[in-house]
Each structure stands twice: as C-alpha cells, then as structure tokens.
Amino acid sequence: MLAKKMETALVHQVYEEMYSFYLYLAMAEYGVGEGMPGLHHWMRNQALEELSHAIKFMNYIAEKGGKAELKALQSPPKSWKSAKSVFEEALKHEQHITDCINKLVDLAISLKDHSTVNFLNWFVAEQVEEEASAQGVIDMIKLTGNAPGGMFMVDRELAARPAAPHPLMPATTV
Ligand code: FEO
Image (cartoon, rainbow, N blue to C red; front, side, top):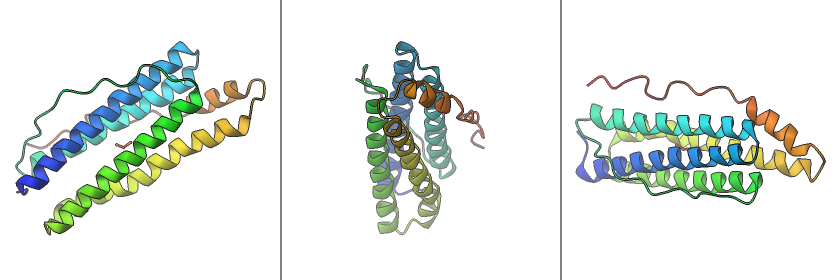
C-alpha cells in the first residue's frame, strides 16, 4: 500500500511521462516537415519509450493497490528553428524529468518506502541514459559544423536507432 502523498506524486509522474510521449511525437513531426526521416524515426521511438515509462508507473501504482487517474495533456510546441534546437529542448526536458525522478526518490526515502525507492532506481539509471542520448545527438550535429551533407549524415545515423519494444508490454497483472 502506498502513502497517499506517494501515490499522488507517482500519478503525477504518469502525466510527466505521457507529456514526454506527446512532446517527442510533436518533435517527430519536425522531421516530416524538414525531410528528415531519421529524426522522425528517432523521435517516434523515443515517444514509444516514454509511453512504456508511463505504463511502468501505472503498473507499479496498481500493484501497490492504487489507481492512476489520468489528466489532460498540455499541448506541446509546434515548431523549432533547427534540428539542433529540437535536441537541445529534448535534453532540457530530460533534465527536468531527472529532477522529477530525484524528487520522487527523496519523497520515498522520507516516507521510508523502500519498495518505491527500489522501483524508482530503474528510472534513476534510465535518466543517465536519456540525457546522454540527447546530448550525443547534439554533439553529433555540432561536429558536422556547416559541412555540406552534414545533416544528411546525421539523419542517417538517427534512422539507425533500434525500434523500441511494444510500450504496453508487459501488461499489469491486476
Ligand atoms: Fe521517461 Fe525520457 O524519461
């Protein structure tokens, strides 16, 4: 059983992960508009990962006897000035998510809720990867400078991202 305060905070994180899903879907559309199929593919797969994070939180809340009541999502931005600015915003967003996860861990520790600390540790590790992958793309874009065909090569790299697993699996056992 979760303390009410912990349950409310975990349910809010479902919103944060779902907004991440929505934000990355919007970013994927930048790739459509700019003729960057690799960016579109990378962001679509990132969005699916975020959906799987939201489901992971929902499954945990259910396993602990709680219920995730879903909130309406805020509209994500519609346009960016460059592919670099798309990934800079993605990095800033991941830093915000890291902050959210850290605050959840602080709360779980203060409530002596060891199972939630254990559950959140997966996300603590995941956030290191999430920030590093956005930063990696920014670094790759910077390396191209303004070389002719540079963004074409970056887009090909982005297209090589492996497909994300089905976000609704595994389903909750309740
Ligand atoms: Fe769910 Fe990208 O953090």
